[in-house]
Image (tube, rainbow, N blue to C red; front, side):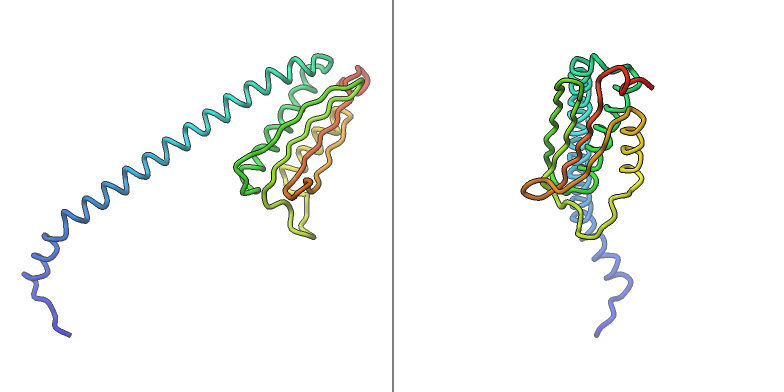
Length: 163
Protein backbone atom coordinates (compact mmCIF):
# COMPACT_ATOMS: atom_id res chain seq x y z
CA UNK A 1 0.00 0.00 0.00
CA UNK A 2 1.38 3.39 -0.96
CA UNK A 3 1.47 6.19 1.52
CA UNK A 4 0.21 9.58 0.44
CA UNK A 5 2.54 12.49 0.70
CA UNK A 6 1.57 15.30 3.02
CA UNK A 7 0.84 17.55 0.06
CA UNK A 8 -1.44 14.95 -1.54
CA UNK A 9 -3.24 14.45 1.77
CA UNK A 10 -3.82 18.19 2.14
CA UNK A 11 -5.05 18.41 -1.46
CA UNK A 12 -7.47 15.48 -0.94
CA UNK A 13 -8.76 17.08 2.25
CA UNK A 14 -9.33 20.39 0.50
CA UNK A 15 -11.15 18.67 -2.35
CA UNK A 16 -13.42 16.70 0.01
CA UNK A 17 -14.10 19.57 2.44
CA UNK A 18 -16.97 21.18 0.46
CA UNK A 19 -18.80 17.85 0.15
CA UNK A 20 -18.34 17.15 3.87
CA UNK A 21 -19.59 20.63 4.74
CA UNK A 22 -22.64 20.17 2.50
CA UNK A 23 -23.40 16.80 4.09
CA UNK A 24 -23.01 18.28 7.59
CA UNK A 25 -25.29 21.17 6.69
CA UNK A 26 -27.98 18.81 5.38
CA UNK A 27 -27.70 16.70 8.54
CA UNK A 28 -28.08 19.84 10.65
CA UNK A 29 -31.19 20.84 8.67
CA UNK A 30 -32.72 17.38 9.20
CA UNK A 31 -32.00 17.50 12.92
CA UNK A 32 -33.54 20.97 13.21
CA UNK A 33 -36.66 19.82 11.35
CA UNK A 34 -36.94 16.81 13.67
CA UNK A 35 -36.54 19.05 16.71
CA UNK A 36 -39.27 21.40 15.45
CA UNK A 37 -41.57 18.42 14.92
CA UNK A 38 -40.88 17.16 18.44
CA UNK A 39 -41.67 20.62 19.84
CA UNK A 40 -44.92 20.75 17.85
CA UNK A 41 -45.88 17.28 19.12
CA UNK A 42 -45.16 18.38 22.68
CA UNK A 43 -47.32 21.48 22.19
CA UNK A 44 -50.16 19.36 20.78
CA UNK A 45 -49.91 16.98 23.72
CA UNK A 46 -49.94 19.91 26.12
CA UNK A 47 -53.03 21.38 24.43
CA UNK A 48 -54.72 17.97 24.56
CA UNK A 49 -53.95 17.60 28.25
CA UNK A 50 -55.37 21.07 28.92
CA UNK A 51 -58.55 20.15 27.03
CA UNK A 52 -58.78 16.89 29.01
CA UNK A 53 -58.29 18.83 32.23
CA UNK A 54 -61.19 21.09 31.27
CA UNK A 55 -63.33 18.02 30.57
CA UNK A 56 -62.18 16.53 33.84
CA UNK A 57 -63.36 19.66 35.68
CA UNK A 58 -66.85 19.27 34.19
CA UNK A 59 -67.12 15.51 34.77
CA UNK A 60 -65.55 15.57 38.22
CA UNK A 61 -67.57 18.45 39.60
CA UNK A 62 -68.41 16.19 42.53
CA UNK A 63 -64.74 15.70 43.44
CA UNK A 64 -62.89 18.14 45.62
CA UNK A 65 -59.90 19.96 44.11
CA UNK A 66 -57.29 17.63 45.63
CA UNK A 67 -59.05 14.50 44.36
CA UNK A 68 -59.37 16.04 40.88
CA UNK A 69 -55.62 16.78 40.90
CA UNK A 70 -54.87 13.15 41.78
CA UNK A 71 -57.07 11.92 38.92
CA UNK A 72 -55.36 14.35 36.53
CA UNK A 73 -51.88 13.23 37.66
CA UNK A 74 -52.80 9.57 37.09
CA UNK A 75 -53.91 10.52 33.58
CA UNK A 76 -50.68 12.44 33.00
CA UNK A 77 -48.47 9.57 34.22
CA UNK A 78 -50.44 7.02 32.18
CA UNK A 79 -49.92 9.04 29.00
CA UNK A 80 -46.24 9.51 29.83
CA UNK A 81 -45.94 5.72 30.22
CA UNK A 82 -47.56 5.22 26.82
CA UNK A 83 -45.01 7.59 25.28
CA UNK A 84 -42.04 6.08 27.15
CA UNK A 85 -42.74 2.36 27.09
CA UNK A 86 -45.47 1.23 24.70
CA UNK A 87 -43.97 1.99 21.32
CA UNK A 88 -47.46 3.08 20.27
CA UNK A 89 -48.19 6.42 18.66
CA UNK A 90 -51.78 6.48 19.95
CA UNK A 91 -53.67 6.10 23.20
CA UNK A 92 -57.37 6.09 23.94
CA UNK A 93 -58.59 8.01 26.99
CA UNK A 94 -62.05 7.32 28.37
CA UNK A 95 -63.63 9.23 31.23
CA UNK A 96 -67.00 8.12 32.61
CA UNK A 97 -69.04 9.21 35.55
CA UNK A 98 -71.90 7.00 36.67
CA UNK A 99 -73.70 7.16 39.96
CA UNK A 100 -71.10 7.49 42.69
CA UNK A 101 -68.08 6.44 40.58
CA UNK A 102 -65.67 8.14 38.22
CA UNK A 103 -63.77 5.83 35.89
CA UNK A 104 -60.70 6.87 33.91
CA UNK A 105 -59.19 4.49 31.37
CA UNK A 106 -56.02 4.92 29.32
CA UNK A 107 -55.49 2.24 26.71
CA UNK A 108 -52.75 1.69 24.17
CA UNK A 109 -52.05 -1.07 21.69
CA UNK A 110 -48.29 -1.07 22.12
CA UNK A 111 -45.89 -3.65 23.51
CA UNK A 112 -47.69 -4.18 26.81
CA UNK A 113 -45.95 -5.91 29.70
CA UNK A 114 -43.85 -8.97 28.91
CA UNK A 115 -45.09 -12.05 30.81
CA UNK A 116 -43.68 -12.15 34.32
CA UNK A 117 -42.41 -8.55 34.26
CA UNK A 118 -43.06 -6.59 37.42
CA UNK A 119 -45.76 -3.96 37.29
CA UNK A 120 -44.31 -2.06 40.22
CA UNK A 121 -42.32 0.73 38.60
CA UNK A 122 -42.10 4.06 40.42
CA UNK A 123 -44.76 5.66 38.18
CA UNK A 124 -47.21 2.81 38.80
CA UNK A 125 -46.53 2.91 42.55
CA UNK A 126 -47.25 6.66 42.59
CA UNK A 127 -50.47 6.15 40.59
CA UNK A 128 -51.63 3.45 43.05
CA UNK A 129 -50.86 5.74 45.97
CA UNK A 130 -52.87 8.55 44.37
CA UNK A 131 -55.80 6.19 43.83
CA UNK A 132 -55.66 5.07 47.47
CA UNK A 133 -55.53 8.69 48.69
CA UNK A 134 -58.93 9.34 47.08
CA UNK A 135 -60.44 6.01 48.14
CA UNK A 136 -60.14 4.55 44.66
CA UNK A 137 -58.44 1.67 42.90
CA UNK A 138 -55.96 1.40 40.06
CA UNK A 139 -55.84 -1.66 37.84
CA UNK A 140 -53.21 -2.27 35.18
CA UNK A 141 -53.93 -5.10 32.76
CA UNK A 142 -53.44 -6.27 29.21
CA UNK A 143 -55.69 -4.38 26.81
CA UNK A 144 -58.01 -6.40 24.58
CA UNK A 145 -56.02 -6.99 21.40
CA UNK A 146 -52.67 -6.33 23.12
CA UNK A 147 -51.09 -3.36 24.80
CA UNK A 148 -51.90 -1.98 28.23
CA UNK A 149 -55.07 -0.79 29.93
CA UNK A 150 -54.86 1.45 33.01
CA UNK A 151 -58.18 1.85 34.86
CA UNK A 152 -58.64 4.28 37.74
CA UNK A 153 -61.93 4.06 39.64
CA UNK A 154 -62.71 6.80 42.16
CA UNK A 155 -65.80 7.32 44.31
CA UNK A 156 -67.36 10.73 43.66
CA UNK A 157 -69.36 10.98 46.88
CA UNK A 158 -68.13 13.21 49.68
CA UNK A 159 -67.02 10.19 51.73
CA UNK A 160 -64.68 8.72 49.09
CA UNK A 161 -63.44 11.95 47.53
CA UNK A 162 -62.64 13.89 50.68
CA UNK A 163 -58.98 14.09 51.61
